[in-house]
Amino acid sequence: MNTLNDLLLFIEETGLYPEIRSLSSSQKPLVQIDNRELMMFCSNNYLNLATHPEVMKAASEALNEFGTGSGGSRLVSGTNDIHLQLERDLSALKGTEDSLVFSSGYLANIAAITVIASPLAGVPKEMARMLLKYFNKETVVFSDELNHASIIDACKIAGAKCLIYNHTDMDDLSKKLKQHTDARKIIITDGVFSMDGDIAPLPDIVQLAREHEAFIIVDDAHGTGILGENGGGTAEYFNLQKEIDLEVGTLNKVFGAVGGFISGSKSICKLLRVTSRPYIFSAAMPPSVAAGLSQAVRVLQRDSSLRHQLFSNIDYFHELTIGTSIPLNKTFRTPIIPVMIGDEMKTIKISKQLYEKGFFIPDIRWPAVPKGKARLRVTLMCEHTKAQIKLLVETLDQLCKD
Ligand SMILES: Cc1ncc(COP(=O)(O)O)c(C=O)c1O
Image (cartoon, rainbow, N blue to C red):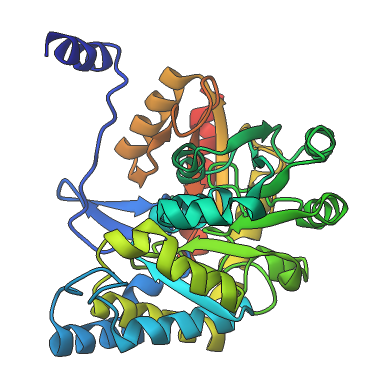
């Protein structure tokens, strides 16, 4: 017990214990915190669908009809018609045969990766013994070094051999694939990287996967609903929907609620429904949440103006930062824009100064990003005004100069 207290004391005394701010308003460009109004530049509610009138109406109608909970896991008693409708909507958006929804994206990654990497772990021992002859090769997972924590945790739970390749480094991936010619191979990458905002080089990954007969899983938590002609995500952006074996994503970002999904072929989804532990042992999302999400998918598909407005804001931010002292990475057209401060204490200080000046942008540091790569992770929403963005860039420029 002393050790735990000492650890807490250490974190507090070194100034590393994060300030956890509590909002008393919805996720809009202007939020209420500590009885103050602040400009919110850190929400994943990129298209402001969390408060879209049609989405709120669908969710509240379902809440009145079905109550607050789902009553069970998806496999046993928690599946409602609305979950199945949401799965059809997501399949249409993703251009896949089928989809499964879970109560979080974290769980969706655990479900997808554990089953694909260790397919026999989810079947009874006697059956596993009989099937062993089909899985007599070692499985190796090739995972980008900046993949999300839920992918890293899922690989650990799966117990498969996991090789980390340098971030988006296709030479490194190719070298590692060549060293494992006899293995069953799985390549896993984020579509849009959650802390850097850059886009995975899917065309090169698909090419390497073809050469080495590897299975591809893309976690498109941040690309879904944003990239591609119809908001289908990173695979659609590259016109590679048919080449990706399995897509995973979260429903808490662009769709504005909570939950996760897996989209892929009918047969893999059917298998996942009976072998993935989060589908079997964790409660389904409430039907009201699923109803709001279904409506969010439909709004997103019907109304491309939300995405155009978001991209106009992204372009405006980048235009304004040219020639300023704001340290940005190579820029990608995504709503995640990391301001790379590096030093953890400096990042904490700038985040606090921004707060005092009316901006809510928490500092992001280890373990969310590597040590020494602390940053302010600016995210934009379609409802931000140009005046709000201009004020942010001017303030950031001043603080970074100082
Ligand atoms: C790339 C990525 N994958 C998975 C997740 C987990 O999703 P959820 O928050 O729905 O558990 C996140 C959330 O931050 C993410 O950014």
